[in-house]
Length: 218
Image (cartoon, rainbow, N blue to C red; front, side):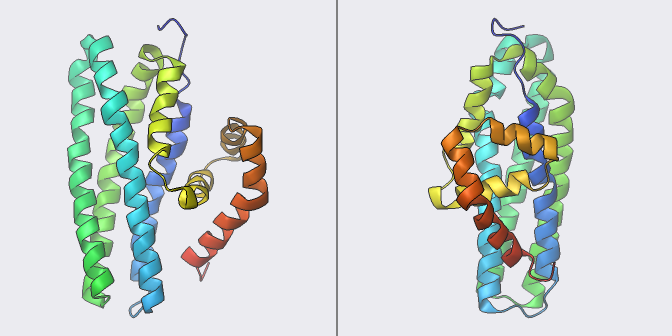
């Protein structure tokens, strides 16, 4: 137990819900149109690249600020922590394959390249979900005991720092959408009051417009 008591790590489970669903959804969207327009390809390819960047930033924060602390402070669980940390290599491989397939589809948006991209997205989704299952089951309980709240919050701040300002509402909308109403209230209440107001007045409509464009037939 740290001097500050138990770190509240539940917010990571909320973030994980986005990564559990977004790549499989993107695969379905790519498959949904045999001959998409140039604008549609550009929008979806940009969306996929952005989502990949969010996952990379999320893992970079853990690589820098989570795994080293756990390995030092919970040596009895070092083998488990290292095994779950090493799964980032598999995820990184999946990210690279999706990135390459996405670039190829962007340049040549035919059915064959679309199928390759969709298959790569499905494979990444499976690898990510398996990793998140183990992280939530084995690592988060250790983190809640071994890290202070300030140290835990720094992991999220590290990830957010990489998001371009003009994409922040999109990222926040992607996280809020699959969350429960209770979790949404919790995440919003943790924001400074001016940011909460900005989300209500500008951010929510920005995300809704983006989501409608993402899923035009929904």
